[in-house]
Structure formats: C-alpha cells, structure tokens
Length: 115
Image (tube, rainbow, N blue to C red; front, side, top):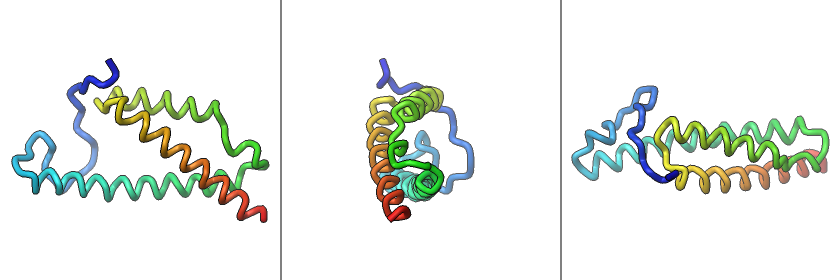
C-alpha cells in the first residue's frame, strides 16, 4: 500500500516551529505549515533556476521534454518518499504537476533565449 503513512524520520536542519508530533494547538500546526511553505518556495525557486540552466544548455528544443528523465525523477522521488515516510499518493501528483510546469517553463525560456 503506497498510501500507508510510516513513521517518518526527523527532518534534518533547524526548525523554529514545533515538531508535528508535539503540536498541541492549531496555531502551532499553522506555524509549522507556514515555515515549510517558505522553505518549499525557496527550494522550488532554486529548482526553477535549474530549468533556466537546462534551457541554456540544451542544444535543441526537441530535447527539452525527456521522458526517460521524467521517469527517473519519479523513481528517485518514490524511493525518497518511502524513506521519509511521505505518502506516494501525495508525492506523485505533486511531482508530476511540478515537472509538467517546469517543462512548460523551460520551453518558454528556451524559446525566449533563441528568439
């Protein structure tokens, strides 16, 4: 069962918000969610930077979409999700959508830089 939540290892790094297991109020829960959202925005912005780099490096528009790489990313994410106790039911659609949006963005950047 891919959606069974396993006990998750503690995430590395300092967090200001309390650990989810220690939250006693919705204020604490929301503090944690907001903190994670800020971190995710920073990480996704950095990922977008790699799309800029890919658009710059790839020699042809025909190689912007790479099905083998899409499958490899999904396999990598599935393994990491399992290791971290993240439901594949959450991870898979998030990554699929993010990759599709990143590919569309990369096409736009590729086109804009090759005018």
